[in-house]
Image (cartoon, rainbow, N blue to C red; front, side, top):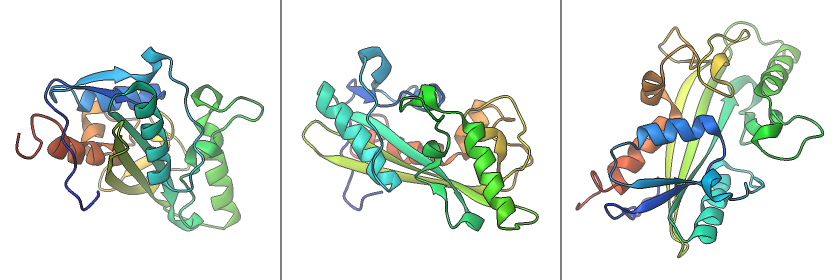
Length: 220
């Protein structure tokens, strides 16, 4: 998170959720229920999804949030998340979604299959001769951008392991492969409520809630 005091949202204000990922939208909107702000979805405004060209999670989160804020005149919340595999020197990281791209399709969620990403991770792990536990961590950077160009960043991290065999039917993206540290269930085996307690996105959102939303923002 920035060292500067984050700018709070006024009570009753509208905020754009700048994501086209259905799983992310469900998670974030659930965590923000009762926050005192009205959420507007990018998909309902037919906003295009910008190509993520930055080389850091913070850069991509800023890119998406500022693009949406400029297009709508609303404060916009966007995130970028990535899975870092220790044995792969932190890859795929910011390129996690890129590793899931289906060859020959246009950029965007409809052109992604996260089994492709999982297969690549496991193939590279095997090529390195890694045995036993595959140490991993999900990382999230959240950006709240304003039409005047101001922004604040919030970060979260969940350590754990990447499984060779997926488990569970809940969740989305790489959730069936990720086992959070200290648990025996993957993100795809637990309820959304439990995931919202453990995930890196949940940690970043909680910091955002405590500092920027009307019910918990400083001085409100």
